[in-house]
Image (tube, rainbow, N blue to C red; front, side, top):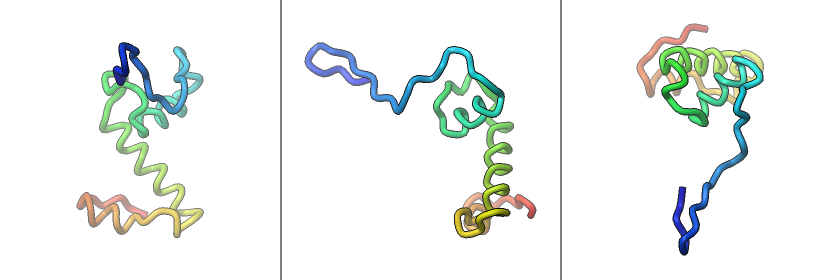
Amino acid sequence: WVRVEGFDLLDSPGIIPAKLVSQEVAVHLAICDDIGQASYDKTLVAAALVDEMRKVQSSMRSFCDMGGFVRRYGLGVGE
């Protein structure tokens, strides 16, 4: 929220529906930090992010540097 000349403005990339269509959509929103952290388990969302990264790497290696991820976070993520 930003207050400009007496107006409260919300900068948002879109409108999140009140009822999420699927668990997959909810996980993707959580990965992007677009829903409140009270709505999900951070550990499960982190694991889902790693799974998504592994899927991308398996089909498009140049799009996802898992080696960089492992070096940055010091975690083994398997192949």
